[in-house]
Length: 55
Image (cartoon, rainbow, N blue to C red):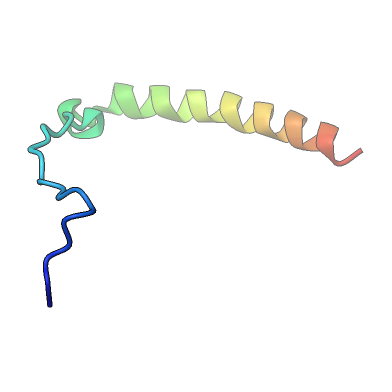
């Protein structure tokens, strides 16, 4: 098969991965409790938004 010269050749570029914040922080009881407390607020907000859209 012939090489097409009418299309650019894409060269792979090196990418630096971003650090994973989940792995960067230790899973302490305090961190887990904070996540659990924040999740309750998030669930409540989602429930309110969902109730508004179902009217």
